[in-house]
Length: 238
Ligand SMILES: [Zn+2]
Image (cartoon, rainbow, N blue to C red; front, side, top):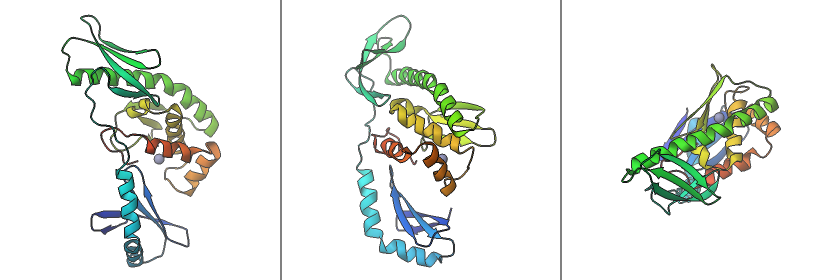
C-alpha cells in the first residue's frame, strides 16, 4: 500500500474516486489513513499530512490512552469478560476432571488441580471460550448468509493478534478471533456479517460499505463498540 512516512508516523494512502483529500485516525492503535483523489501528486499528499500533524498526534494519543486489559493472573477475584459482561473468576481446586463453568450471572469457575500454573488455567479458560463461541456461531452464520445471500464453506476460530475476523474468499472460509467470545454478541454478529460481505466484495471499498449499510445499517456502531472496549493485552490493528 502507498504510504507517507512522517517521523514515526505512517500515513496509509488510499486512492479513491473522490475530489478532496480526507484524513482519518482509526482505533485502537491510531492507524492513520489518508483518502486521496487518484491523480493527486504524492508530494501534495505529504504536505497536506504534515500540515495536519498536530491533529494526527492528538488523535493517536487519545487512542493509546484507551483502557487496556492488564495481563491476567488467573486467580480468584479477578475480572474476566464473557459476551460483553464482566465476571469474577473463582479458582476451585479439584483432583478430578478439570473444567470451567459459569455460576449464576457473576462468576466463572475454573475447576483445576491444586497448584496448577497460570498457563494451565489460562488454557482451560481459553478452551472454554472456544467452546462457547462455537456454540454461538452456527446460528449467526446461517442468519447472515440468508440475509446477505451468500454461502460460506466453513468457519474456524483462532486467536489472532491483529484482526477480529478474516475471510478467505477463494475457499469461502471465515476466520473468527477467539477474543470475540469476550465481546457483546452483537459485535460477533457484526464481524460475521462483515466477513460474509467479503464474499460479495473483496476490498473495503465503497461497494463493500454500501453492502454493509444495506444489510446491517448500524454496523458502524458495533465496530466502534468493538474498538472502544478494553482490548486484550496484545494490540489489535483492526
Ligand atoms: Zn474486512
